[in-house]
Length: 391
Ligand SMILES: [Mg+2]
Image (cartoon, rainbow, N blue to C red):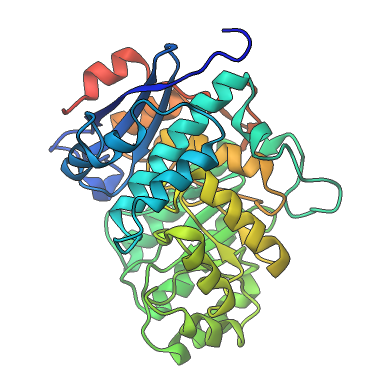
């Protein structure tokens, strides 16, 4: 393809993959997951996934030329992704512009960036603005690598079984070279939250990063303050979602009383919600998913809003490495992204997660090299798609 050949969207394809009914999502198994592929008349395609949106909703909204997004996108010329993002956003003016439709919009945006990068023969991070880290962004580390943090879960919550399983997983991943770990004392007592964090810090030592995610555990600020006081000596990178996220004000009250950075944003959509988290909630680590938040286009805007507020953007991803590949591109560009979330297939019972991880950017000694292929640079191998396709 040479010169100014127009590339037009010719087809939107939705397909569903998953581990199957016998594999438990609570043990890391992948529930039916809608993926989408944008086809163009020049043969280039763009790939994305749509986490936590029922596949039937995606199929009904994206697909042939009569669907909502089909009408908007099929026949459109691929130019800068922001233009197509704005077209899709404007078409939702008379809805609430939150929820599932924005997650789908975000997934389409990632697939459009994938094609745009291939058209321009550049990796997406380069088109987002290039590498904007330098010697002054000391928390981000090297300019050539991205650091994943491993999210750890257990089959049960609370007590010895939770402690031993999550700590064993951290030890095993640390021995493989991973550098950062997030424990998840969900549905646990305040005492168990502190105990799990203490045991994990002891197991991994002082040099590796440790985060704690309590998954909306508290309703009252004083309990969360007491837990944070005990956690402060453990040098946590952040403390995630202590409260429900409907209202960020309790986060601001807790932030005023602890030195631990507070994190939220895993299900946040649009820059407007992230602004609220930072300005009303004093949250200093925001965690957009690269699709859910409204796509890479919106994620870049979130970085631009977080930067002058002194916050960090650590992309969330409790889904697959199809989405994880987009996180790597954002992290490569962003000067305020020391970590991206990573659900390590090595310790979960999910054959599909394993296959999708091994098809992705390799983690070598706990780091991912900044990718060089044009576009996002992720493909699902044909045999994996055949084996795990559910619709
Ligand atoms: Mg979480």
